Figure (cartoon, rainbow, N blue to C red):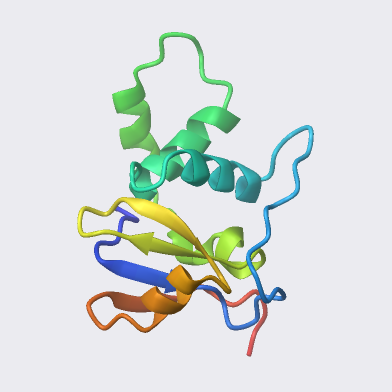
Length: 135
């Protein structure tokens, strides 16, 4: 099942602890948030959510040399995967995600004019990231 949205803006979670976007901290083994941030910062509007999740899987897995990436991707998406509404970027670090009409994703920082414009744009569907705690 696909995690890709089209013409959607995912706003930060209502219980996000920051008032402006923060870059996730780097570590010897980067977190999912740090990897997502790096890929989406380097490649805005190039990757779909599915592309991003699979790229993270490939980067974090010790796949053997010459593995069939098409078959690996099919196997990866044979199980349901959480969409970017569950991303730590939107739950903890203050990043919204804009998904264009082709499903490609870009980060939009909370507290920026671009975030405010997308938040009030009636031409995109609005979703909110999942809360970290129960209401």
